[in-house]
Amino acid sequence: MNLEVVTIGTELLLGFTLDTNGAEIGRELAALGIRVVRRTSVADRPDEIRDAVESALRRSGAVLTTGGLGPTRDDITKRIVAELYGWPLDFDEGLWQALVERYRRRGRIPAESNRSQAEVPRGATVLPNQWGSAPGLWLEGPPGLTVMLPGVPLEMHHLLAEEVAPRLATRGGGSVIRSRTVRVTGIPESTLAERLGEIETAIAPLTLAYLPGLDGVDLRVTAWGLAAAEATRRLDAAAAELRVRAGDVVYGEDSDDLAALVLEVAREAGATIAAAESCTGGMLGARLTEIPGSSDVFVGGAVSYADHAKTALAGVPPALLAAHGAVSEPVAVAMAEGIRERLGADLAVAVTGIAGPGGGTADKPVGTVCFALSGGGETVSSRAILIGTRAEIRYRAAQAALFLLLKRLRLSFPGPEQGRTRK
Image 1 (cartoon, rainbow, N blue to C red):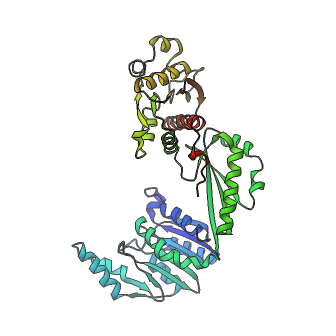
Image 2: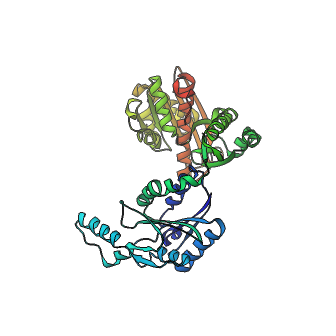
Image 3: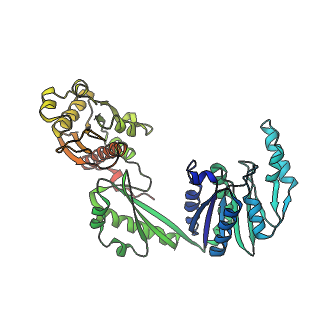
């Protein structure tokens, strides 16, 4: 089954509100084997709503809309769609009394404008909304199938899951649309593509998408219109093939967070972690401490931004700073070793760099970042040139530092985490 989604609201087009509804609808329906073939956003204007819904019905025969079911003058979706079907709006006394009771329990009285929310296109099925005041509507007739849901994300979420999905489940033909994502970092997209080779041929009929971002590159493989068991089998095989070909740049799958994985592997190994940060300004520590329960692994860190702070907090010798500069591998090494010794951690990571937009030189351009990792009787260092804005360079530096930790932990303390398969 093909279906189109029309999200309605001028605020979506002005950029004041993100269209999270469209993304959730796509995920929910894909799990049912229903393919969302187009998403359209339109303003709260009669002609635009009519054209979007009518065109979607003509192309696909099924459309799901969100927004425009409230009590204000710009909530006109229901009237426009009813006109397309040639169905008049009837006042539903039962719906109105339920709305009055809902308001009464909250110590309020509905306004006269709320009466419009109890109007139902003749022939439509009401989808009860116990999470808000506007019910959803299911219209099926000669023009096709139209499902109308409120635009409020919480209300849309519950109605989609509890009223719409069960009705559409029988129309997916027993097939599903499922995806699996293999997450990699520390490698450019073009280099990764060369490493993967003719991977599309190896995983066919599944499809592969490269999704670059600040975390790295997500490799999303999708099974279209397969039986659930077959889709799972093929996705497992494809994810395994991607991991083998991508190699040491893989850090997780699906929604895995790199900081959470670092904490998980360190916890399994009984290892503690410390950090010394300069250009990231505490971002690395923030990523780790954002995860609940991180205190049993992350002992602490130092934001040693100025040169004298590197000396006072991480024990970097002033002579080393004078000889090599703050952004250098020798200084990163001293930062990592110093914070590890001072905090008594098993592993310590250090990061120092030039995030820009100024401060770069010919030898050390903006984006130059030096890393060091100390523990297990050795300290290693590296240097990278990261691209992007100041905020992007700082985030990429923190991500790179976390990946250094994860690789060292997996190498030194291989355990259950490395071999598990996520479903």
